[in-house]
Amino acid sequence: MAEIPICQHPPQRSVNLISSLRFFIGIVFSSFKLRSYQNSIEFCDYDERAFNSRILLQRIWQRQRYNHIKRLLKPQGNSLDIGCGSGRMILAHPQLVGMDLNLKVLRYLSKEKRKLVNAEGEALPFTANSFDSIFCCEVAEHLPQDSNLFSEIARILRPDGYVLFTTPDYGTPIWPTIEQLYILCAPNAYGHTHISKYNQRSLPDLLKKHGLILEEKSSMFGSIMIMLFKMEKESEK
Image (cartoon, helix red, strand yellow):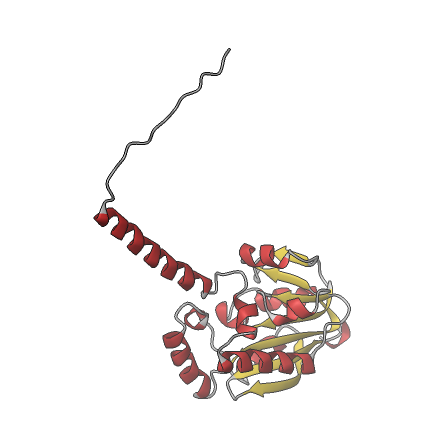
């Protein structure tokens, strides 16, 4: 066996202007596609970038919602964040169990040591009475009203445990108006994926059927409901 050196001289070709132009146009279009993907909900840090957005209105909106959530319920004992995304709750409270359907988000969050689960809201992979508190923020509106989400939450929540829901309020014209503007200005965001529409009365009535009683509520700009529910004791059901 021997090595034989070979001297390779690439052929001299003239520059093809049309090919170069096609290559340049391809790069430009690919850049726009990548930017569009980065600004979509599929991108791993969508929620985190929204919280720190350079767009003042978006930043105020996200921070106000987080402040409302913190005021009504702080993580206590075993806590679960359903549909955590890369939102402020899971980033600010590493003791939370973060659950999301998007694997890209979980890979992004796994850069730091966290308890993460890939699962659907309609089939929570936890034993009964597992959690003292649960956060379900902007998730319910993406699932049918007759989904197993609510019964599953009631199953894994301990008696006297708390669950906090945030969801758009369709009982007033404020959110539907905002939603149309949201879809128009941010077509890659969440606005077009809402399939269930709740109001200040329908959500508490639905959750009461699962043993969850409304304890306190708040509203953000008259468009987002933030509601805290408590699980009834077994003897009270």
